[in-house]
Length: 426
RNA sequence: GGAGGGGUACCCAAGUGGCUGAAGGGGCUGGCUUGGAAAGCUAGUAGGGCGUUAACGCGUCGCAGGGGUUCAAAUCCCCUCCCCUCCGCCA
Image (cartoon, rainbow, N blue to C red; front, side, top):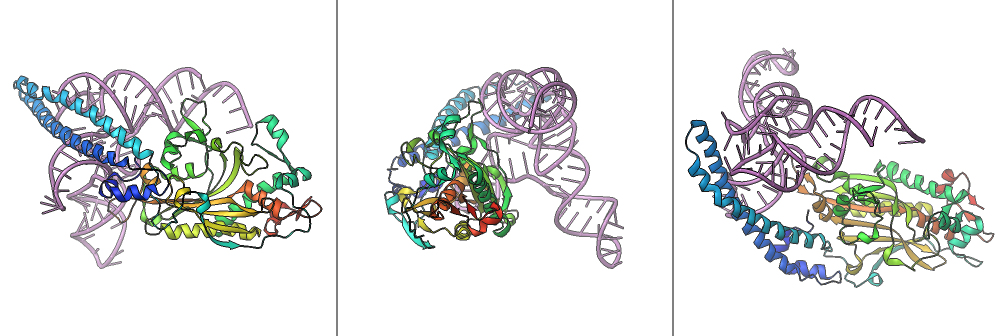
C-alpha cells in the first residue's frame, strides 16, 4: 500500500516535489526516498539470486534422496546462503517500512491546473446561483429560529451527550429526515446512482486506503474494541472501500453509488469555532456520492457529480456559489476539489455545504482498486471520486435562515412539501 | 458467550514435507461433428505483485492473512481474520 507511485516519483522527482510544495509544506525529503528505493531494489536482486540458487539445490536434494544418493555435500552448499538471506531480508524490511511510511504520509499531487494559493482565502469563486433573500425584519441565526420554534434542543443534547450534539424535535426532526429522503431520491432516481447503505464502523485498513490515516488519526472516534475500529467520519471511507482489493471490468465503469450515512468527527483542530448552532457537530448526517471511473473519464465524471450536487440546492431554491479549492487548501488525498457554499443570511456569507473531489488514482493505489482496461489485458488503477450530495445538517441551517419569516415561522421549500406534509414550520 | 466445521485458481474440489510452482470436474475459449443448434468427442485455460530486460523472456513471491521450523511447506508449529452449523442471549 503506497500512495504516489514510487516509480513515478523516481522518474519525476523534482517535478513531484515542486507540485507537492504548492500545498504549502516542503517535501524535498522525498529525495531520500529515491536512495532508499535504490537500496530496496539492489537488496531484492541479491535476495532473489540467493533464493534461486537455494531452490535449485533443494530440488536436487529431493531427487538425490529418491535415488538414495548422498545429500551431505548439497546441504553444505546451501548452508551459508540461509544466514545471508535472513540478514538481507531484515535490512529490506527496514527500508521498505521507511518507504511505506513516507509515502503514506505524503499527500496526493495537486492537479496541474488548479489555482495556486496558500489557504482558503485564495480559493477561486467560479459562479453564483440564486438570489440572496431580502428581509424586512431583523434576521435571526438558525439557532434562534430553531429554539424559538422548539425544533432544535441544544441543552438536552449536552445533558444526555456532550457539546456539539443536538436533539431535533417535531418538524425539525422531520425536516432532517425529509431532506435525507429527498436527496437520496434525487440521486438514486434522477441521477442514476445506485443506493447503498453502509456500516457506520470501519477498520483501520479502510481509513488508510482513503487517506484519513495515518495523518489525521486525532480526527476520528476510536472504539475501545481491540480490533482497531473507528466511527465512520464520512461515507467516503466505507464507500470507496467497497471495492478495495478488487479488479473491476471496464464495462461496469463508471460505478456510481449514493449513500446516506451519519458521520462522526472529533473536530479536534476546531475548538472554539462555530460553537453555536449546528454548523459544526460531532455527529451529522450526509448524503454522499461515490464514483469509480476510468482515468480517461474521471474529470468528466467530476463535473457531472458537481452538477448533481448543485441540483439539490437548485431544487430547494437556496442561493449558493461554487468555488475551486486552491493548492494550499486542498484535501490530503485529493487532486482537485470543488466546494459548494450555501448562503447563510445571519453570517452574510457563504458556508461550505458540499465538497466534490477527484482523488485520481491516489486512493485506488492505497486501496488496490483496479480495473481491466481491455479483456485479457493488465489491470490498471482506476480513479475514485466522492462528493457531498449534500451535508444534511447544513442544509437545515440554510433553509431555516433563508426561509425564515417575520412571524418566526419557516417556509418549507416547495420540493420538500411532499416529504414534510406541510408547507410551513411554525 | 459455549460446542463444532470450513477458507486451495472464475466456480466446485483432491491434496499431511521433495516426483504438486497444485490432480479431477464445471465454466469459459477454440477445433471436430451438424443444414444450424443441443448433445458428444477433443485441445487450451493462475492470476497478480515485485525485481530484471529495449523486447521475447528470466527470476522471485503466491493454496484466507501474518510469523516460525526446514536444504525444501498448501502440507508441521504459533498468532490473526473471515464464513458456516448447533446451543444460549438478543433488536
